[in-house]
Length: 249
Image (spheres, rainbow, N blue to C red):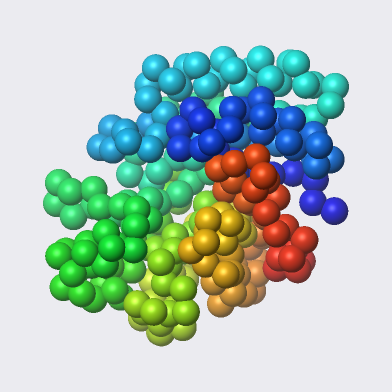
């Protein structure tokens, strides 16, 4: 039985429910641990993440919930740290390291904003070459090896809008070389890679991150995997964990 979910978002950033509503939903589901991991502040794009002011409010609220529900569930104060951020994460119980952007010159380009934005970025900055786009994305992911993180988040987020290989082939040697290179750079950290079901709950994919070929590579190299829902609503906590639990065994 899965007893924890450590990748969740609330109304403090781009989620729907309050942290307390997420905690209560976790208790109702019988979890032993719930971790809230808001998007940490990124100076180059503050549209989706905690503001600096909200960051302190978030910490205070999570500490309140830790104490209030200590007899019912373990509540952890987490943060999702972007690879291109310089955020101080020393105050958190754990850090999820993720890459949501690539940098081209002075431009920070999101990889998960929308299908149309993703395709336009590839055309404008990578000449329509999705494998070149992937190489730059995974180069960014690999820089997380130099950060203090505890979980690797949705490592192949660049494939969010690639359901059915509609834009590029995730089994192509060019793609796999870039993705496996990033995985190999992160494996020495000895931290888990998440099996993230968030894109399924939001209707973008039918399989979780990472692609099965990447899961197999992680396991073959001695890496570990954990399940995360990346829930932005209370109803999506532990989304399809039972269905994909086999991937972590």
